[in-house]
Structure formats: C-alpha cells, structure tokens
Image (cartoon, rainbow, N blue to C red; front, side, top):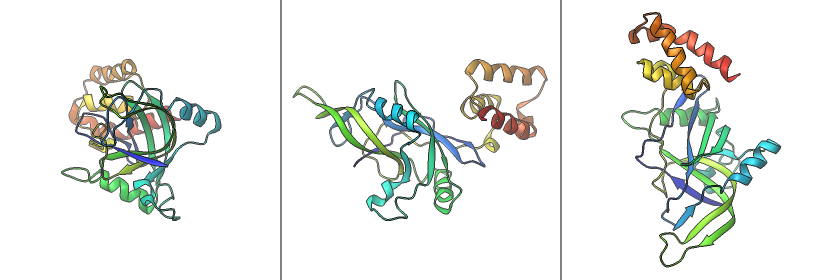
Length: 228
C-alpha cells in the first residue's frame, strides 16, 4: 500500500459542518498535479473504487497518519468514517465524520486550533492498478490512471501541495447571512437556489445578521432533518 499526501494554500473548503457530529469535508486527492514523487493522478482514477464502495458498502477507511505506517491495533483503528466520496473536476471530494473517541476528539481539536489548524493535510493510501509512463517532454514520471483506494488519512506532512485543510467551522461560528447560506448548502444538502430562497425568507422577515444566534437551534434542527 502506497501513501500520497496533499496540502496547499489554495482555497479549498474543509469545514466542520456539525459541531456535535464532528462532520467535515475536503479533498483527499487532486487531479493533474505532479507530486514530489513525480506522479500525477488522472481524472477517473478512482471511478472503480467509488463504484465498488457504493455497490458493496465497503468504503475506504479514515485513519490518522496512515496508522503511523505500523500494523498495530491502535494505529489501524479508524478515527471516523467517510460518508460521501465523489470525483469532480478538481479531485476526489470527500465528506466524513470523526468518531466520538479520544483520537477522534483529539483530531477535531487539532483542526480547530487558532491562529492556524495544527492538522492541514489529506493523504491517501492506495494500490496502483493502471498507469502510463511520461515522456521526456512530460512534467510527470507516471500518470496514475486507476487506483485501488484503501484509506484516506488526516496527515501532518504533505507530499503534494495541491489540496488544503484550511477552514473548520461549526454552526456556532456563523455570523452573516452569507455564511448561513454556505452552511445550508454544505451541511443541509440544499442546492444553491434552495439556500438562497431560505435566506430570502429570513430577509423578508426583517431579521438582521446579528440575530442569527437566535436562529441557530431551529437551523440545526432543519439541517438534521434534511440530512436524514
């Protein structure tokens, strides 16, 4: 099993969407970017893994630091589980939920630290099932076209400066209607149009941004129902 790390200063959302459930989302891998090992992951590389996960329910694990690269019981015990995975134009988009365990709570605390998160990296563990060798004119040595994804870790040290862990929020952090709209899309599963419609209703009621704290409980209940 090989490991590949990702991080960067690009604006990629990585949010805690629900404080109680410690849910978050981000990118586990990025396409068309050459890492320090000379590899480039091609779009579609995870298609087979994603289809198999949907079919069997056997999803890649969520680990910390690839289990420390050691086959001990604690290192290989998951810190949570992945609830959504899909490929988009940028890379492998994932949503997960940290476990209410000592290690899960520790990871959540590290991601919430100020003035910067102590954990910012996403990293994948995989087996290569298909690749193409680059030519002398290519920036990459190998183009990885098919990968069997075993796990995605939250990790400290990056190999590829392309994906990021840079923003962690809970519903208690919402201060503006714009942030509320984003929360409804990310956590509540609403489309952009539906979220805007919900915000319009709030505006029609002459509610100010300063009153959002009073709406937190009702919004929390709504988004839980939407996810259900």
